[in-house]
Length: 297
Length: 292
Image (cartoon, rainbow over all chains, first blue to last red; front, side, top):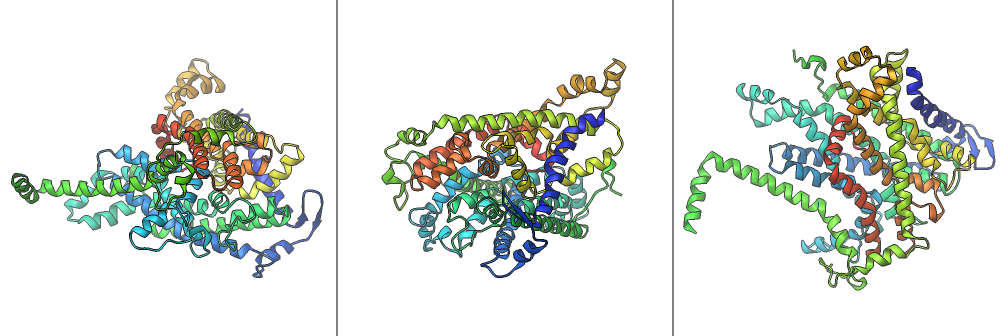
């Protein structure tokens, strides 16, 4: 009976996850388009790792994605945590603020992309106008290889509200007695923050970090839309060619399905390795209470 | 005037003033942040109502003058097919996925939460470990499979997989079932309820809040989809709103007002849903700790 009830998941897992994953591993060993295929062994992986940019844009797209992630992750986590700390101060109108800050996360990515595209217009965009008010010369943003990736970093910070919500929930779960006890013991503001707030929030931080890594590596929609969607996508000069965008172009514009599968598997392995790295490091900085009975020995 | 200054002076010395100053600073920072967050949305609305010659003005015009309501007509009639087809497609896809998700996840999670069977722990670990699986790994074989089945330019590849449960929602539902006291199970069993009776008569009615959360998340998530429809749908009459918007951008890239109109329309349903069901939304995020 139980197996019957979980059968939708088992079927889904086999048909839409495990099966396709193994198929994609097999596909990566073939030169495949929709009509023919030829076994090529590990050749795709060799091509992929080539540093010659006329042959492989793997390193380029990985660099772009890592660049985006390295700036976006700390900023979205930092801003989200900071706002959560402010909101946790028994502020009047907390739920109102919480809603406003979360709003960008429910807006379709593509709709948000249109507005940001307009805001970042070099000629008549309001961001350049606001910069000119404080005496900074306008930039070419999406049209300049040096600033194009920054546009997406800034956009991601705009969406930091979802992290804020998770942090706020974590902060509200910290028992107030801990702070009272620490105050009696003579701990100052900073020590209470460091030894109680940070320690107690570290599991949340860990969770947010893992999801942020995975999400930021999958950045696609806004880059695709804002860099034009057509042949200019990922430009200028491939400076915004993110990993998934590269994968999409290889698979669905060039129909090199075997090579794209190799790209997909390398992507998967990279994400697993990164996640494991974070898990490995967690024993050093994540504080776990004994879960059951809430016992603090 | 001097009285005010004097009272400020006395307040300054008191601890209460210090506290008030503290909260005022926090409010100031939060308000400033809120303005920054809301600004793009306000700008979207303002631009959607601007006349063509005002859209590209530098320095920018804040409030459209005159207010051009006709932009909303132009933007929705510019497509070769009726605009309502896109709305209908988006609604159909989202609602079908809500049905699929609610049906499959409530049942699967119930088995994981309440039934004992061989391998249940291992299987649940598998569920958890697939939560983070990036969709890109399965994307290409699924595309080949679905195109062999002749499902390209239909909604089947976008809807049918949602009827096979999803690790996030299984986890969320299971968490919720765990809060329902087990004494109810015993009572139901004494009253002659079987496994299914317990599910339909006790668990399902009590799990309404969690079902609401799944429904909202699935609706918004599907409504906001872009990559998935992009892969499977290429005929305009099959486009959901997201693809229609992308088409508009690619074809008429300078029609900023019209782009803002369609963006605004595309964002309305999730926005309205969020305002109505804000509590469920936030509760759901807190329960899974996941932004969906």
